[in-house]
Amino acid sequence: EAVAEFALADGDKAVAVFAYCNLHGLWKTVL
Image (cartoon, rainbow, N blue to C red; front, side):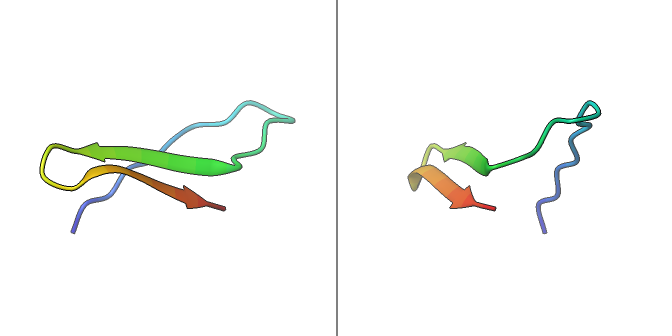
């Protein structure tokens, strides 16, 4: 299982996550 953690500054908001796989290309998930 792949896991990633990101730190956000106060007031910042995550809106999407992007990941690139050399087998499947670019993936995007809107939060």
